Image (cartoon, rainbow, N blue to C red):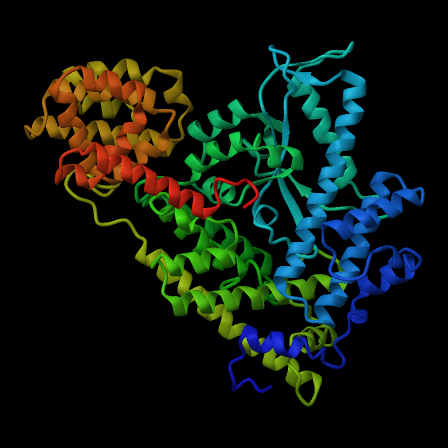
Length: 605
């Protein structure tokens, strides 16, 4: 298969199913180790692709053989990976079959570990209950590839632990629900993440939880809502996009876990075009590229990272997530956690050219298949192409690159990899360029771009620039603890909005009374920084708001109680038509139908 003929994922699949000679799972050092150490246990895994039923049967057989749960789950993990290496490399299992099996392994082991942890701590402290006596539920939230059912074969799992509400346990040794679930979290890590003589089940990463590694191991639903509304950052919207409750399954099946879904959906998806998210993604991606360059400094082989390097898997995921976050609020039918499903839905919705989506899907599968083979070699969480010639040749041959000798196979693989990464990088760069916020209009200049240094709301210089009456209203607002807790970018947004209101008074576009009411209205809005960002990016919405506030006092009272009404002011149709109840009802029904079709009404979708 020469490099002059562009290879597609279809070609790769066809060659894989022919099981090319020389491409055998036994080349993997990991597979060799498992076959030596667990030769007696290999037959315990039922034949075929390891699905949930086969994985559960395997763990049960290991338990029946006398192994404790922690050991049984670790051995099961080793046997499942050995089977997947054979099915993938020798028998042409699809990428979806491999990632699906890994996801089911994670779900099966988390389910058992959680049940064991709950039993242990119930016996010690009693069950956690609300003041009304109801038992408090606890959810293991899978993020990233686990949430999207896209786990790779040597992946860690990103988890967040959430419990329903506060309370206390009902045992003789009573503790708070938060303390109880913190103990459960520690037990989960011991059962799943700790390395023993049998290895680990999964590496566990809790860094995505509220406040990161400095935050508590688990949070209540109310704590999570407060965090997302007040402190949630743009990159966290991308992280939560793929979130899914993965255990306990009973909470998913009963619909009890849906309490989390509504909270997350409103955080991830906004009804208006959110230009600020592009800048957030640029900053996040810049950090990723800088980190990749730093790691590769002095070690050129580290530039061949199929996930993090330029044009890698991460950039395809960024492209998809950016379009979903920006457009998913307006078009619920495109919402999905799966990268490949999202590409299909974006195409069907007219939000991506079919040719681009098709090539990105092929690139994603190609890069993920390389990633799996890299990880089969030694069961390491790495995405770097190996430097050993024999390993590179094995990867090439297992992907269907069959030439006259190993060097030819490797060259063909590297050629296609280079072409693929260049295409992905160009698509990503083009998307971010096209997504830049429009040029600033009058009164909407960005910080530092209007001939004066940026000023935050808590600076004395800012207050001195305001009209006296408006400054008198802003001064007490600056002393609010909520203001001091805001990030600097949010303080800049507040200052820009207030200054824009002052300009509107100066230009006779609104009254001073409207401007002071606007300042009063801003205080309850501090919990919803997304609305501040929207007003900054869309000055015409602030203009409508100022006009409304100038008409009477009751609009301000209503808006303070229902700040979400600002979404309706962002609707351009308000300028061109009267409110029609029937049309509005029909629109709500259409939105609900689209949401249902998207599968977001089902936590398991």
